[in-house]
Image (cartoon, rainbow, N blue to C red):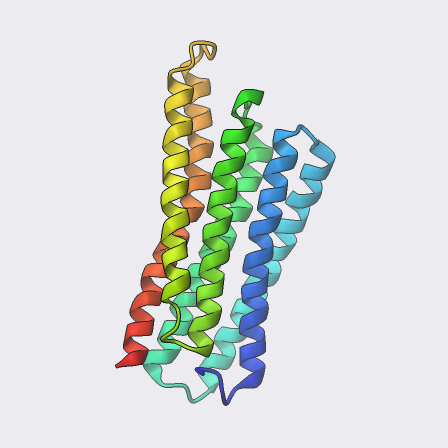
Length: 214
């Protein structure tokens, strides 16, 4: 266990992972409310995810400060730093994307609700699996591959769903304005990006785990 001599640091790290997971779930609920045109509930989740993002930033800084003070091996400390930054980037992306819904108010035809919801669910599944892989990394560094493969699976599903959605939109003659099609594509890309970022973290975790096994 990487944090076996620093229990308080381990607790902070798991709290950060919990927040990563929670922001993904809040993002999913926020998108659901937007698609259902439930603005009051959407605003609730937007406020909540903004609060969670700030809390995650605070915890990340606390962990990084403690890491400087602890006697972890420099390489291990560097891996944890990078992992925190990458997961924080995922959290930021969830908050920023939900905020973009609030700012740009995309007009999503009801027939595409299921497409967007599936895409969001696949992206959130990828985040959940990368959180599980990160948790295993600090407990059993050589036992992360199972969850990493699940991240890859959901990232591919998100890519497939994103492509399916974009193809449908650009072949939809009922959407007359090309600008509206571009707008729908823009939001599909940003949701899909969550899965891409999760895949990037999974790639790095795989390398970190290999280094721990040598």
